[in-house]
Length: 309
Image (cartoon, rainbow, N blue to C red; front, side, top):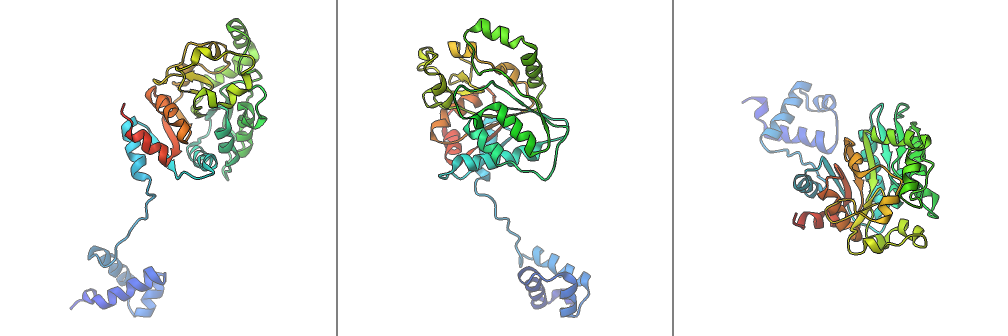
């Protein structure tokens, strides 16, 4: 009988290796056999089913795969919904961005409370001195500075040792003529050209305008009657309908941001949003292919999976 036919020895070697975590040289010494023999026993134990290697998968992987297939997405990342959902989304979004960053990338970022959590949870041992961060939209009324796109671009660049360019313009101006004037100014057009050259975009997705921090900042200056029953949400503070199309309204005609059709040309668009109030807005963005990678929560992911096209 070959030594390798001794099941008792095989099991003992497996216990020493997998349970006591001894290395193969130490096991060979204990068992009085050669190290190659220990290796052969371990291989044979797997072949005979004595040892089964089990990977404890994230139980959301199947949901993520189904969403990727349904919506034609490059990747979906789902997190468990908790009381601190935006923080969890921020961590997941940050980890994905850092994983995808390459030298010479231009990363265009939007504004908002979720984006604020992404940057606050960004830390990288790798530095990217040739990467450039730029904002996708102008500043926001009286809203907290932390959620401004300029602040987010600046903070990202400091976290990963990159560079940034800032957009010194408001999120909306008085009228469409003022918008054309502003967009043609050198200090603005220089930034918008970099936006168009972006290789990665990282955006939040706003919910119903009535729940938007941005809308609250401008409620006294603008009428939003022309978006009632039309706007499902916003992306880069452009109001969109259920098909993800930009709505023809006063706000959208006055906003200082990259145009949605130009945004769609960015090769990698990462959308980070979750929560019950964001489901319709996320679905709308998916309908118009405004996202290549989605970071969301489990419950929202399940709703998106069940909704029909």
